[in-house]
Image (cartoon, rainbow, N blue to C red; front, side, top):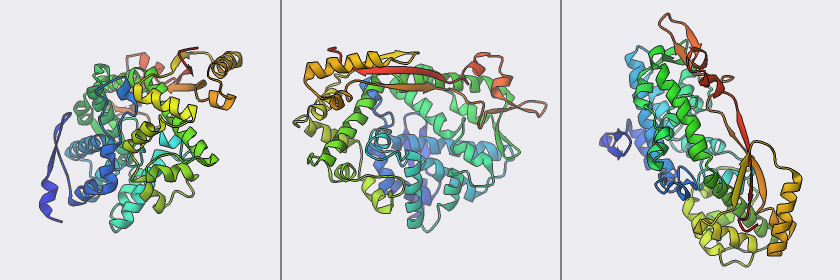
Length: 408
């Protein structure tokens, strides 16, 4: 590998020029497993609400790595000892933290694989890459799994004020045009420090932290849990579930080789091996879109109807309330759908369904964001803030939704 490769730069619309810090990082970015992230949308079906939201997991991973470089620079400047090996491991851990995402980001893990989270799949990818790169990712994996003795390194990768969140809030805000989510990541990073091996924010950064927490809350309600995005993502999961159901029944559906494999096999954490990773790595948003375009012509009413809904943005209606929906309300809707379309109760469940959404902008029970006061005391930001709403934001807000066809 030419050593000049590490001098390559990438022009990013959020931060400007991003540099690649080492040859190993460059080789990982060049790897086909990482390049696949160019074809995985960062925000799933949110482009149906925000037309600009077509950015990818590839862009996000590079942005998070860029912020990690800034964090290491700031902490070293403040006297925190971070070795070159630890720094490179941090860059690798944050670069690969989302490598396990499937098509449209979250749809896969709730439909055609059996409760295998993207975090688990990311770790499986890392293990395969570690073997391929002669165990040079071992430290990065230890940090990612929080098995390394320096806790603040994991907090930078996966904490309440990590580089993942600092990038996706700023990036998603930019591409959706929702300015409420815009945060000053540079300011937040410049206020970071380490006390007793744990990440802290210097007291003068309190208002930036408050803005970050509030921005996160607003982005969840306004963007990530937007009712149209919610309906679309649920329909996509229902579509894949139906395709798997029909395949199990013996139907042969037009699909790519990779998608067909997951439709024809029951995949769990136990059998998600290196061979499965290889097939999964060939699966992206385009497989799903191609399948939907074919499935609109299938004779199965459910598969055909949902495919049309997603392709044409003619979605179900959604009602969101604080209380739970009664069984009578759901039953009436189901009967109306069964009668109107002449379908079974099982088929009707693909068009009438309920669920729950949660929003918790800040957690006080786990891995809190701690402030370092001028006197040297370390306190939870929620206790230090003169904004009473920060404690309120630590409470879980629960809402219930019901989806059903507009025609009923």
